[in-house]
Length: 116
Image (cartoon, rainbow, N blue to C red; front, top):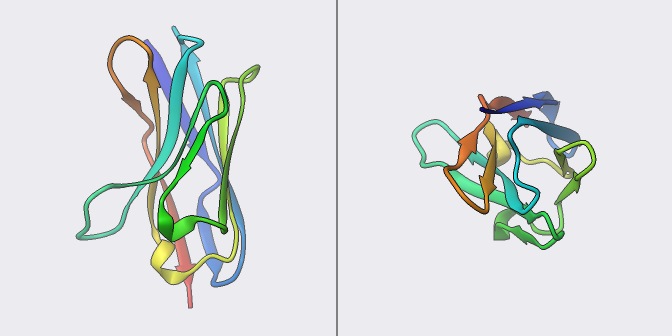
């Protein structure tokens, strides 16, 4: 059983910063990819950023230069440092874990609201 627990969301003014955390527990493959997705009301869930266990990162064009994804393999935790936040970043942010074998797991989501 794998569990993902996200934290760090909240209400922030435009231009501000937030850091999201996602801790994974359970039967974890050391080779994996983890990432952050977001879903705004009425829109499809979209990739924000991902990072492999080897440290290779990928970002959506809309967040490049503003968001940074990182991970602490010893703690099985990933982070999303979000800066220069915009109202259009408002969404529920989901963490996911993609092992080298098996299914993808998702967290419960954390709300990020950016006020103008």
